[in-house]
Length: 125
Picture 1: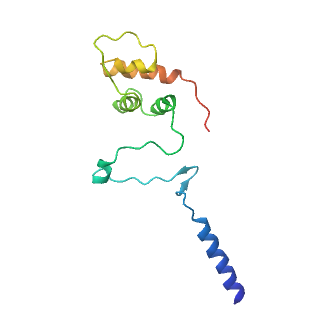
Picture 2 (picture 1 turned 60 degrees about the horizontal axis):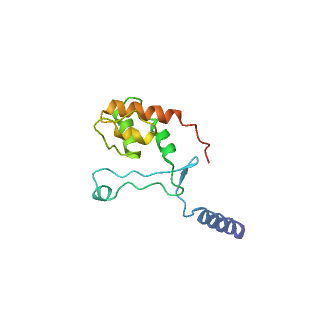
Picture 3 (picture 1 turned 120 degrees about the vertical axis):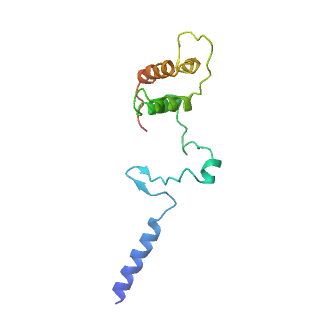
């Protein structure tokens, strides 16, 4: 009887220590809980950057490549990284930041695609 009680106490305390402040994990990524869009909290709170090391523009542009090519969603992803600021007659883009000056969505998408695909893949850390 004492042995069973001792084993139960050890197992219970081990499970209590296993519950740390870390969120539950799925593989190597944290489990994310999504709130419905209609709540007032979600509307009042702007999207926050992920905790930890901030991502570079190159990494965020490469993440947009995972969205279907030629879609409005991919352009919206690029526009979230670099907001558009159209000019009347922009010259040829010399860098990815110049893509925001194109007024036409198709031209802007093609410009971003060209630069995002030419960025060398960064090692995962």
